[in-house]
Image (cartoon, rainbow, N blue to C red; front, side, top):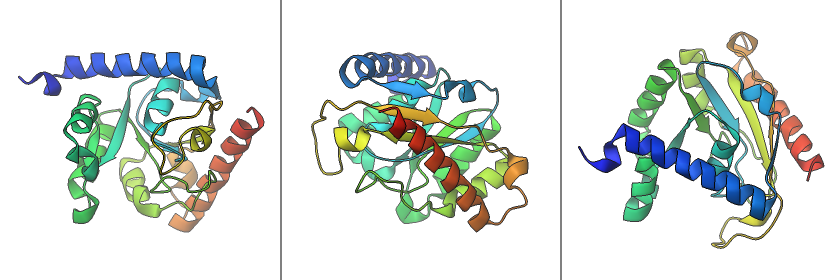
Length: 213
């Protein structure tokens, strides 16, 4: 079996990256997390995070004790080195050019197995550090799997590594995690109402993170 596909190797690689992210996050970027108590629950969930930089997936992973599952655009697999890293992190490949059906099926599979999946509902990185409009695509998966939604906001990552730059700056990083939105709270809401609720929860997290900077 290829080492890259070995589940034990993937777990070891994930924990190594997680440890390094915590170490360098704290020592170089004064990483602080608020609301970590909201992560202490068993079972699946969609973790909805604001998206500021390439740091974000590893940054969020560093603040959770539990192993997270990531979504990765198919284009990120074009680089051999990057593809190896993403594969070792056991990311879910998402092909937007072909509607991403395979990636959505894999996401559903992992949620139904009890895993937590991290997504960025804005769909792309922020161009100004602020929270953008949420896209509704993830709601079909959330409703089908009947999972809670956990809001997470980041501050500092945009300033540390804004879109279009390659090298990070020494800027304090803050992560704020809010109470989860249970399926019962949005099951009867329309998509627009659900997005409005989630936008408000993300803004509340953002204000907590911003105020702690």
